[in-house]
Amino acid sequence: MNKPLIAPSLLACDFSEIRQEVEMLNNSMADYIHFDVMDGVFVPNISFGIPVAKAVNQHAQKPLDVHLMIVEPEKYVEAFAEAGAGIITVHYEACPHLHRNLQQVKGLGAKAGVALNPHTPVSLLEDVLEDIDLVLIMSVNPGFGGQQFIEGTYRKINQLRELIHKKGTDTLIEIDGGVTDQNAKKLIDAGADVLVAGSFVFKSDNPAGTISRLKNVK
Ligand code: DX5
Ligand code: ZN
Image 1: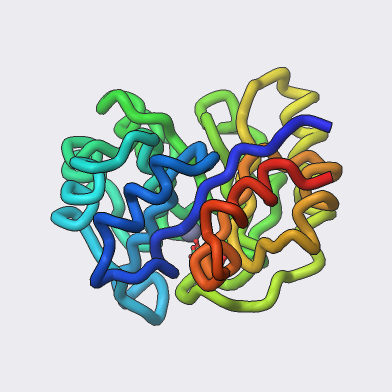
Image 2: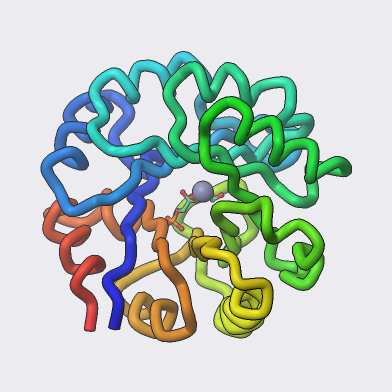
C-alpha cells in the first residue's frame, strides 16, 4: 500500500499559538499544511485569509495547501500565490469558468486544485482533468471542522480513480473532512493520495504522533 500524503488542517489548531503549531508541523511527518479559507458567502462560516497565509508561510517548511471556500476566487488567487501558496484549490461550484481559473493558478506558478462538494459528481471534471493537479473530494459539507464523514465518498474516489486512469493524468486525489485512523486505510485502498485531517490531529494529545499514525496506517 502506498503511503498517503498527510495535510493537517490549521483550521483546528490553536490560533493563539499558530507559530508553534506550524513548527510542530515542520517537525512532523506532515507533507502539506492545509489552509482553509472561508468567506461567509460560499460557506456559512468565516476563517482566515491572506495576511494569515503570509504569516504561516514565513515559518512553514512544507507547502501551503490553500483550500478556497470562497466565491469569485479569481479575485484573490494572485494574492494567495504571492503569500506563498504551493497548491491553490478552488471549488467547482464557485467557478462558472473553471478552465480559466485553472490557467490563472498555474500561470502564477502554483499547483491547481478543484474541490467538489458532496453532491457534485466527479464526472463533471471529465473535460478538464488534464488541467488539474489535484482534485479535493469533500467528505463533509464545507464550512466547519469536526463533522461526520460521509460514506458515499469511497464511491466517488473509485470513480475518480477510474477517470484519472482513463485520461492518463497524474492528478492527485485529496480527501477532506472527517478523516481519522478509522477510515484512512479504506480511503487509501479506494485510491486517495492525500488525506486532510483537522480535528483528528489537533484535538489529539500528541498531534505529531497522530500525523505519523495516519502516515503509516495499515
Ligand atoms: C471543512 C474544511 C476542512 C476541515 C477538516 O470545510 O475544508 O479542511 O478543516 O476538518 P476535520 O478534519 O475536523 O473534519
Ligand atoms: Zn479544507
